[in-house]
Length: 140
Image (spheres, rainbow, N blue to C red):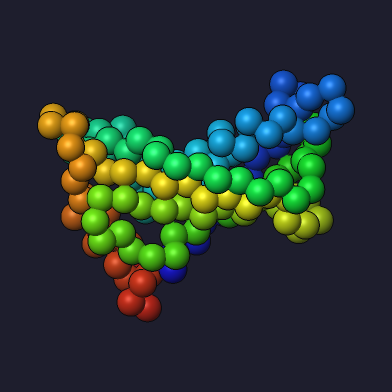
């Protein structure tokens, strides 16, 4: 299993008239978590695109347990529970407030797509090598 956490401060524009984070913004929070998770492994979406691989979202689920509010410092935990074997990768997300209360849970599925053909492909080997140790207990 691989886990990464990052923090974000809720901006005023992300809240509604009730001072609660608008539910649609959680997709962006999940994306921040994914991007930073991949960055920690030495990758970026841009680097993957340069390698000829794109990663569109094909499914997103969210469960809203408690609200986040303007100026809250939230922690986004991004988890890979399994090493991708085929063309898809599943990221699990948990969003916490400063009191470590779970606010939101999510699951986002992306496909690895060959940029030239538009067809499904597998995870770039370089990324697979970086992740494998976390699933075999031999991470550096």
